[in-house]
Image (cartoon, rainbow, N blue to C red; front, side):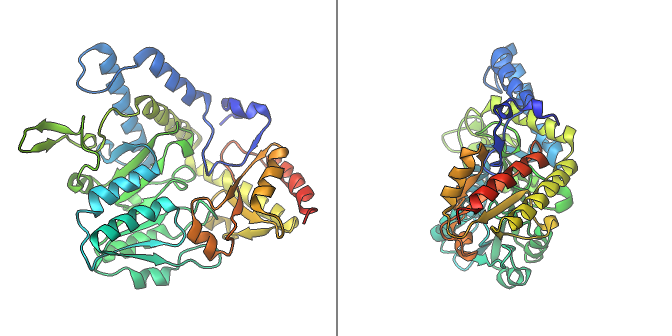
Length: 395
């Protein structure tokens, strides 16, 4: 990884807002540019050269993302983002199967995108939505998980890493409890997949959703991984052009996987850019990405303690991603964010689309979130410390 691959950083900004979106390396920018300049066409069914080239690039992008998470290409469905992917499972898989008396289990830790789709389908079908509570560090309770998941549970949904505290739950325990009770599990990998090695076969996860823009890729791109047999039985949630092999006035023959779940003209250039982002990360090595972030967050937590901030989330960096979330007593989060912005340090402030979790950790007015990625440095953490020392004097 070279910082010079990220031209936006030349402005001198210290960018600690990676949980919201990440910057794009030149390789990704060039891949998207090259597609529009040399290969732009719609995919599939076209017999002319440009259409064939676009189709090959688009299909290759599925293969690259499959390698990235150790899946098969037919198990990789391209989506707009994590939210889109989760909603596809809610509408295409859960909605047809839920009945009164059934339940879906999620946690208090979740981003709204892993709560609202389940709330929607449960209310439509008269099913119950259950929430696993979290402890003071924001980690879900394994004991309550076992109490709430039963033989009437159809699906368990959990984030692989909190977008607020960076808390990393025991995903393997969630998977085991779900499968022991005959339930399917979906992991929201929006914060997990870009920051650590993920092997879907080794995890034995049923569905995994993640976004491209949080892993160096273009906005408007994402992935839904599903086990082949589950994607086969899932109803296409967005039926239309490209999802069928044949249509009569009486019926439909769905296209093979993954195309039956990718209705309409896809974000082809975005998919090409996302594949380039995955190649970039694989070249760096996801183990190296994870270890680098652990070093950064350990330093950041130490800094926050030194300046007297209120820190949220686990102290053990093995249970925490590259996110440092905090407040200063007596200062609103947005004020802290504005003061940091004046010093060219970009952080995120507010409730981070996780209102229930903020109530649970007693931060109803929101938090300040500094989130790190592979291009951030310890030197930037030092600059962060200097800025926080000045801000802490205002308390």
